[in-house]
Length: 360
Length: 148
Figure 1 (cartoon, rainbow over the protein chains, first blue to last red):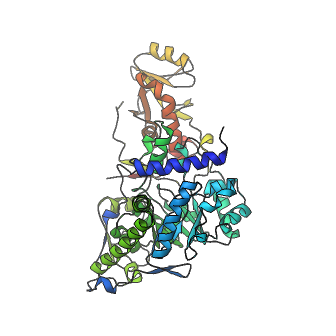
Figure 2 (figure 1 turned 45 degrees about the horizontal axis):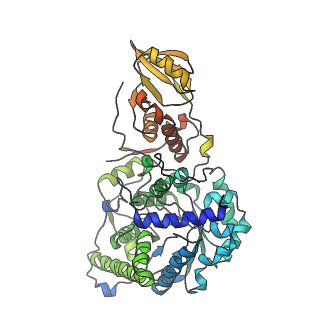
Figure 3 (figure 1 turned 90 degrees about the vertical axis):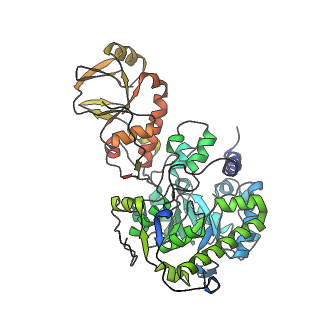
C-alpha cells in the first residue's frame, strides 16, 4: 500500500495530466461575463497612457491579476512551479502554489513549493485545503507558510471535488470555526477560495470581517468535479459536471455581503474578462489553466509571454473604454444583461445599470 | 404521474462550506404518512411485481399504482396512500432526483434502472451535501437558480 504522501504526489501528477490532455471545461455553464457590459467613459485615451498597475500587500504589481495556485508536491511539479515563478516575478504578478498538503506530510517536498528560493521578489500565496484544518493545528499551518516564506494563505474549499474524488475528504463539519480561528492566529492574511464551483452570498456573509479576501473561483472555467470524474472512472461525477455558481454572479453575490476584497477566478481567459470583473468590484483576477498551458508549450518564456499579452490586452481594453487607471475602471458604470439580470433578481441582488457604492 | 422533466434549468446554489459530513446526511423521506429510507422510488407495473422486488431489495421503496392508489412496498410491507397530490416524476440521475424533491415531487425510476439505484442515491446524497442539507426537508428549501 502506498503511504499518504506517495498517494498525494501521484494525484498531483494525474491532475496536471488530465488538465493538459482532457476536456475539463464546463459544458452548459459559462462565467456569465458575456452578460456584463462596461459603459465607456467617453474619454479618448491611448493605450500607452493607461496604467494597469495595482498594489497588493503594499507592493506594486503590473496588473490586478495573479496566478492561481495549481501544483507542487512532486519533482515534476517543482519544475512547473519554478518556471511559473520566474515568469511571475519578471512580470511582477503574484503567484499561488498548489495545496501544500504534500509537504506537511513529507517535508522533503518543501522545495517544490519554495519559489522564493528561486526568485525572491515575488508575492507568494501559500495554500492548504480548508477541510485539512480539522487535522492540522494553527502551528502546523504557520510552519507550513513560513517554510516557503509565503505572504498570504489561500484556504481552498472544495466539497464538490472531494465528493467525487476517490480518496476525497467528505467531512466539512466544524471547518468554518477552524478557518476563523486560524485567520485570527496566523501572521499571513487569509483568502478563502473555491476551486471552480463558486462562493454564494450565504457563505461569503459568514466571513465578513473575519478574513482578508474571498476568491470566488466560480463556474465557467475548469471543473475539478470533471477532473475527478476522469480519475474515479465512476459515473456519479458526470451528473455534477456543471455544478456551481458562474464566476460573474459569484463575484456579485460575494460583493453584496462581504466587505473585504473579492477576487474573481474561474474561467478568466481574456483581458475583457478581467476588465469586466474589476468593473463589477473584483479586487484581483486569478488565472490558472492558460498559465499551465503556456508553461507546457513554452516554459518560463511561454508563461511570461502569456502574462505580458494579458496585461497589454487589459491596457488596450481599458483604453478603448476610456479608463486611464484601475481606480477609474472600478468606478465605471456597468450594465447587466439577459440571464444574469434574472439570476441577480432571483438572488435578491439589487439591479442598477450604474454601479455606485456596491449597489447592484 | 409525469415522465422525465427538464430539470436542467434548475440549478442548486452551491454551498462551498457545508457544515456537514457526507456520511451524516439523512435521506429519509415522507410521502403521505409513509416514511421511506430513500426518496427515490422504483415504479413497477403491478402490486405483484412490487411485492416480489421489495423482498429482494432492502429499504428500497417499490411502488405500483392501482386505481388512484400508490402501493408503496418497503421490505415486503405495503403502505397504501392516495395517488392524488403526489407528483411522481421520472429521473435520469440522482441530481435530477434531488431537484424533483426540491420542487415538491417524488422522483421515480423504472424497474429496468434498479441496478443504478445505489449510484443515484450516492448522487442524491452529494446534492444534499453540496447544499448543506442535513435532511430532505432542508433539501426541499435549499436555494436554487432558475437558469435561462
